[in-house]
Length: 149
Image 1 (tube, rainbow, N blue to C red):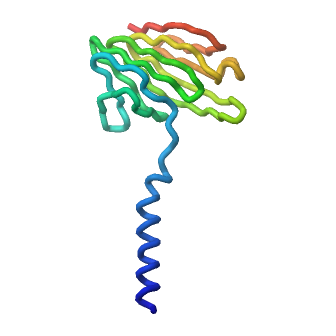
Image 2 (cartoon, one colour; image 1 turned 90 degrees about the horizontal axis):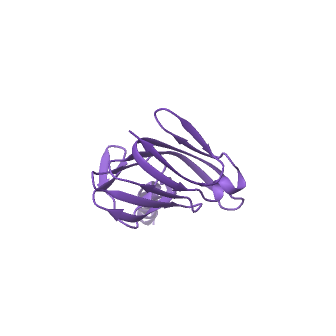
Image 3 (cartoon, rainbow, N blue to C red; image 1 turned 45 degrees about the vertical axis):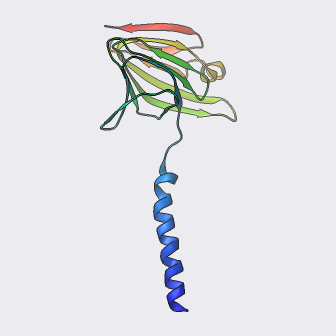
């Protein structure tokens, strides 16, 4: 009987250890909708080829090659489109689907970014911020484009 108890206890511990990484994962903030040419997701020290359907997380960096473009849709329905030779860091994103409150900070390090703002700016104007090397934009709900040389 003791042996069965130890086996059951070991099985429970093993199950918890295998489930822990899945429980620790943060929810995705966006999804890749379109990719053309070379486009990558930089996550930590990994540089992954972007594919339609890939999930994006806070702190991911999007990079496109010379002929590459990528389109993203965030969980609040904000849409980003990055043009060729672009680098965009998704530094911060929080959104509560129950009350449509949240905030976003993205940094355009180089290249082009076209944005159609979603629910974040509809309920809280100025909750979306786009940083460039020379300016900070507080978005109040609109469509706009940014180009960084």
